[in-house]
Image (tube, rainbow, N blue to C red; front, top):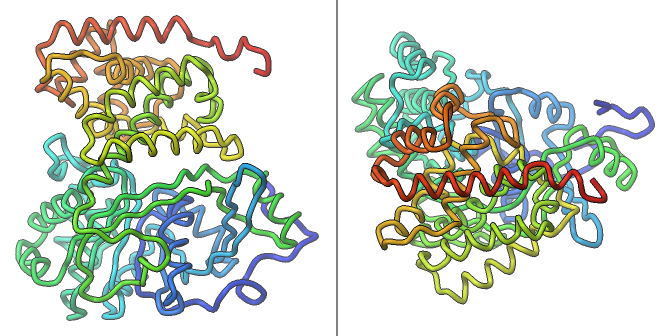
Length: 473
């Protein structure tokens, strides 16, 4: 890709943005979403000059390599229905590759570092089916052995990195810190605390007591659709703004962040930049997980089988929209927020989905279904079966995921790919029983449910590839 146009200057703090703020937040898993969301909220906090973010990449160092020559600056492109808005974001004071352990441990040893945030996806928690650390995972085992041999060792997993950081912070006497996960799973604070404590107990049980005294675990719900960057965005920045940005971020106008928890070492004044600070995130995260993320997963599997590539293309298809509405009809009544709020949220989601200027790829959403289906779809299905009902909405989503694992629609990319693809072999009925045995054993035995999944899979396959045969495809 061409990221170095010769006719425009490179974005840098010499000619754009604010001076780098002192690092007080460390972020694990920097990508487009982080930069459109947490970094954007921090940029707009009135005390942003006091709260710099040191961000570490996930599996690939690309973001660090792109942003280092730009002093951490990047352009946020807000895709309005009638045009683009461009804004230089200055809140990333430093960007590092994931394996830069020296830098990470240095930040954790500093008393000024007050918050760790994460966007590592559900897969990054390294959880087993019971919600505890998957201690048998080879990378988890390697991190445990490395930290036992050398507390400053380079680690690979997110729980391993955090435990290593806490070992360094304890040794430095650097004091209290808050961990604020920003990943799409229920009760992400307690969920992340569980796996970190589990790993700490394997490395140094005494660290758990230090964590009890020094680490606060906050919880958050995050929401902003943020597609991947393409050369089109780079070209738009160069043409409109007159500088070269190797890694701009496209996003939608809508954004929401709901946070609950204590921050003993402080935090930015996020509430003044639009963050909702609450005592309990659960009603908000359930609404978002079921309504937005649930419908996203449904479309990621079912609509790609039909032949669609983006959310906007999918929702414009009357068949796919009917499938989405059928899912919402089931999920909505189970939410603990007022039903008027549910109706307004549904309407807002449709408006967001129809924004074709936000090119949100369904294949991107389809990744890691083994981590997503159990929290986005199965809870509502479980409640419906307990009430003696068998609605199409969640059954269709489950059927679409199974077909995806069998090779239909978007390509499979999953943290447990070998396990789930193996379980999906055979007939749809056999795959349903094998996958539910792992991810929803309490739903079995249920011959009616299995038969319904088979029926919905046949319905979806009847539409396979039909979108590509229509005018405009």
